[in-house]
Length: 346
Length: 55
Image (cartoon, rainbow over all chains, first blue to last red):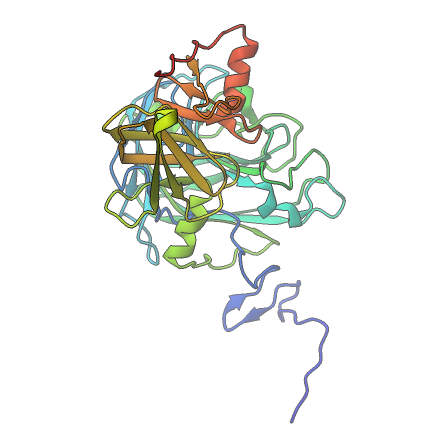
């Protein structure tokens, strides 16, 4: 029997990225390469594929799971999970401009973003001399061509790396890659708070734009001079296959099974499946004139969530939740839940 | 706008109600909705008192 012992395997063309079976083997290739959750936009617990309007000054988690929008322009847009996707994907996130703002003020901006929990990027050692380089890759398609912008930042958004990329052909899927050196300064959370953020700008004024491809100790959402998509009424912007990984190589998109990806999303947002199957246990306390009902969450959440619900049979007195259980408190005559959601997004 | 919540078990309240969407927000520093509530308080605002509990 042969016994092969080597220290490194490098590509014949040089560098440190070996290619095996046609696939580059990046660092951390043994699982959870992609620190982005729902990067292929498959999970849409809130809207199940329905379009949602984003008016001027509206922000929040309104669309597909884990993706946040912030529209501080005078324009408006809609967001929707779309089945228009490049080969190998089934979903994308579509932004359509419904009211244009062609002349952004210096402080105005509109972006899509994902906060990454510190636990999921702590190994990258940002904020230290050992900071790892990272690579962000994604597929985009837009009706508008030009140089677009985005940024990588820490959770507090006071350390920023603006980047830009070019959309060369209208209405055509293109894959883009951004590789950057890790930030050796700044504060980068490694706990259950926001550790890192990825921004994709749809239009950013000068106050929050900065020099591309360089770290800055300031809040930046985009690179200087990037296209203002919000400036074109009817413009479309699709994005999917978003991956952020350690190293300098954009490896193929990490495929995770649907159940795992859904569970990863449910750490931040959970919606009651009213069709059945959810464990609801009720207790009536006549002396206290109340009824309680508890729901066991399928995944331990990031922290105690905010709870919204719709009930029949009475009005809730309160709803409280730990990271694993929600407790609804209502009138002694009982009540029933027709909808409920728990959110602890970053 | 927010409203205080009586803990029906007679214990100290552990959440606040956001009136706009009837959301119950826990007093957890890691909850961004709670952080927004604290910011709202710091701006000099005051939540509505809790509803009276049934006898």
